[in-house]
Image (cartoon, rainbow, N blue to C red):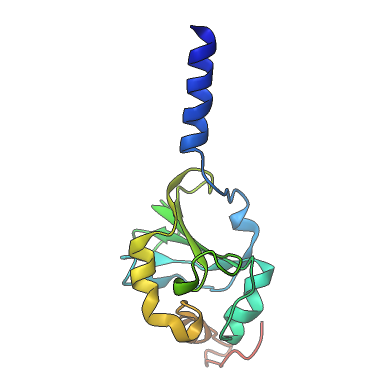
Length: 163
């Protein structure tokens, strides 16, 4: 009896365990200074990227390398409090999902460990499919918004050319 219960518990734990975890997402490279409004997510966001994603995102290159990670915490109001969830994109090896740019998607709670959904999430794929030319990311429009946030000490704005 005990052995069967233990096996069932192990199977259920494996079944509901997240494929990946992201507990240190807050220590990644944060690209924006001010919150950005995301109509598609119906939230305000910050953008965090790992080292592999930083240069391609900033430079708005056409392709991201395998292992590139982009994380967006979603805030319901224009304040950095009460994160509703974090959404994640991770570039996978060629062949993971070739018709959708080989991107893995995740929706997690704030701790980056407990997943609500992960993998080939249809709603994410459908939204990002319009951005095929920029490797399924909206980095061009987002970087425009980030660059517009740079204000010089004298109150004038400046176009950001490098990070």
